[in-house]
Length: 101
Image 1 (tube, rainbow, N blue to C red):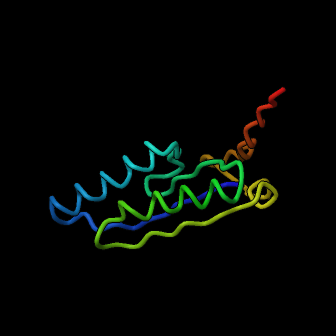
Image 2 (cartoon, rainbow, N blue to C red; image 1 turned 30 degrees about the vertical axis):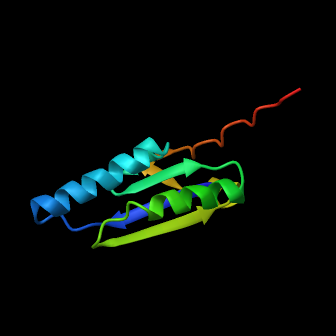
């Protein structure tokens, strides 16, 4: 499962810019990868893991702006079509699960 965070935060005042930067840093600290400037994603091993991350994202939300958190299954994400310029890119493969003996 993939967790996708998209946001549009105000950055007109120094306080708003700081809040937006802090929110981006929280996402990076939680292991999210920046796909676009205001779009971050992370692979989750289970729905419970995704819910834990969602709650951790909720705490540092800035006071203004809009944040969307989407959960995508591996199958849904595999169907994404990604372009870099006019060049079609492959979708990112889900990380392999660890096997414990």
